[in-house]
Length: 329
Image (cartoon, rainbow, N blue to C red; front, side, top):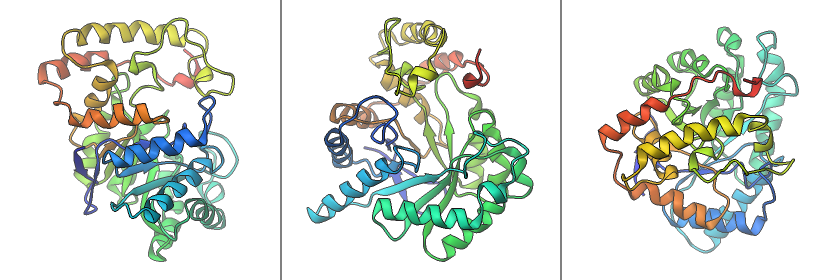
């Protein structure tokens, strides 16, 4: 496992992190025993960064992570594990509309209560990184929630402060970075979604902001394992993400990528992660991991050679400007 600086914050983290959404639910059936084994295996392989959220199974993911950390401490397994979690806005429109008020969706009372729940679920007295789960550009003019979080930081309840970008307007966080409001950003960046390379990633690097990349596999299709016959359970998030003709359209583009990888020695999944890691601003990428096999496959990518420059240039051609996927075609 290779390690990278987390922005300007004085520590290195594993470049392959553990995305813990699926162990909380919403991705089909998942046994806690499999989740615990997967997380233990990833940490044994050198993973030091774990990302979760309040919404991943209503705290289920956080509680499983807390259990693993206690088990490892009791077993005398050394090694610092950096845990990032997220607080969603109070109930309302998702993503927040320009007419939502930040001080209502992220009030001080709400944030304090939510942070207390995160701490209880994780079984810790301090959250390594708390991220707002999500944001709207309209709030940049009055980023009240971050003032509250800085106070919680001064009180020792939070280590670092971050924001998970809104899918529809990721560049809205650039002003937050330049204004010194955030220590990290979590962005969507993959072979299809390459817009962050235009400005966001370089701005983060210039500001010393840590960069966490999510959705590196575009919810699984960039692993190359889906086919036209793939279906998802009704309670699986992907049944909505790939509804209608979306899966078929994505698979057509996956085949073009597969053609570019022929003879290179990289699998689709390996190339997807290596593509993300090729950008120097990226601190860590957090593929979803729910089994021991996935932990081994994803963590093992770190030890593979970097993508050759000619291949990297070729893969950049697969950028897909599909606008806001959730809104339809």
